[in-house]
Image (cartoon, rainbow, N blue to C red):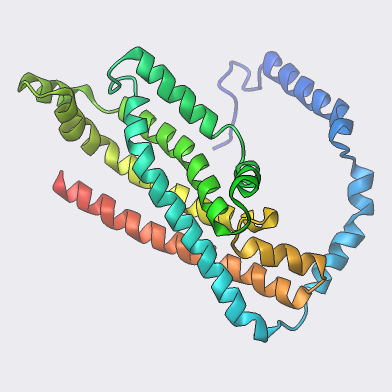
Length: 269
């Protein structure tokens, strides 16, 4: 079956073609703002190939214990930050949900607070916390937790706002309080989506924790930036491979946990 546009002629409408060409032309015209050019990309291809060629080297196996320790520190940073964010984002998410918040003013304040928390990237908050409390994994945990509360609270609030009204009306008909309605009507419906978001955020936090060491906030990122600065490609290739294995294992684990939790939830329903 041939693909065609849902128009009488089967061709894309002129408005769409004109809009697309306008956007492409605008991007081409403003590419100089980010110093992007095809000639620069072509001229730097040799240096890129040289860099990746240097990664083809014999790994420094004596670095293995230090690598494992740094990776474990990265995992701990992500887990602790996610746990702290989970404890804080659940009440904030409830207050930021339009159908669960006790008052429109509380809803607006909670929404603005969550927006403020996720306004800046992890690295920026890590820089601020490093300046405040010093170097090490602790400011990295604080930065990850701070940003994660903003995202997780927003996700949780949106999951609550789209729950079905029938269960809520049924619980209200029994004379239940607002807290009981949230506990027995809203939370069970929002839980599957919330678990999926939690697994995604945990995966993101592990990735983010791997680079926070660049600004002195602990994790494997510090070893990576030092290997780059000292041209220790034998260690750099081990760090890259270690991060890849860590993320792949976490992806498998999160998929397994999510399947178990959601499977149990479906059986319970």
